[in-house]
Amino acid sequence: MSIPVVDFSVYNLSKKEATGEQLQTLSEELKNAFLQHGFVFLINSGVSQEEVERVMDISEKFFLQAEELKKPFSRKSFPNNPNHGWVSLETERLNPSQPGDLKEAFNTASFHPDILMRTARRYALSTTLQ
Image (cartoon, rainbow, N blue to C red):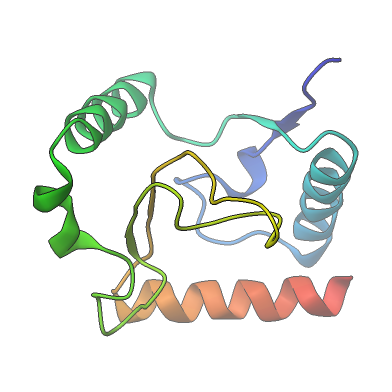
């Protein structure tokens, strides 16, 4: 099985706007990749390899800490966004009749009003394009 490659250049970090047609094409490519494979490899996102490595390093340091040190950052402890934060082992499960997943996570969200509004507009656009 090969992971599909999707070119994100029409809406990467350096782009301010994309046309509706460009967003439609990009959303279809992403939707198909996730529905058919469950994964996608993004190219031309505007995120440098150095930034990826820096975030991975910070992530590793965070997850290696004791649970007591991570608890203040738990999901639902951020009043502006209840999905933002650390998720402990066995908190989530795909199948409710099975034990919790043996993974930790840190869900991220922006608290900046401009980014929240842009995300909401993108979501509204994507739901109308389906």
